[in-house]
Length: 211
Image (cartoon, rainbow, N blue to C red):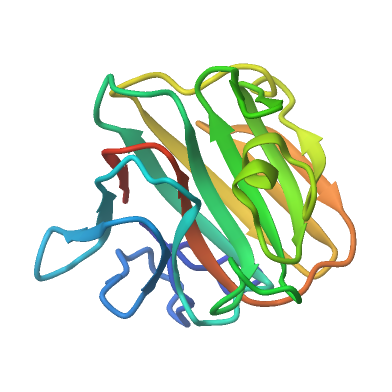
């Protein structure tokens, strides 16, 4: 992760006051859900690997409030096994995966469309609002407490590719979120958004490196 500071505070994975780009140590971040998150590159700990095919959504997040900040980072699925969800959460606070009063944003990207239960999880990148506890069905199909706000401009029905690194640039304010992938703007959503931390998101996809 690298931090750049334009007219607002930026973060690569946590808030900083320096105008210089720098990797961020993730050792103070917190894991929630069914994932296994392993810090990488000690002693800098500037990346984390989620190693298992989870049975439910999982997050690895910073407790620092992130509104008014920008995040730049990379995601790579380091396996050819499975085809499920990777991404980020914005405005996330501790315990919100299972909280009835949850209020945060979900950016998720699925490699391939797949039916799970009575609904289809479509391939592609999207942003959704989460209001309440996230069920496995809601996370898979963007229903229940998960309300889809927008699908990506060119990646809305296109999945990620195995063993390929993607660069994400995300700007997050109380009224707007923009997301670019490999320098191309994919999502630009206006609304009223609650504050909270940045986090990495994973659902049913093993061997994902967030760096």
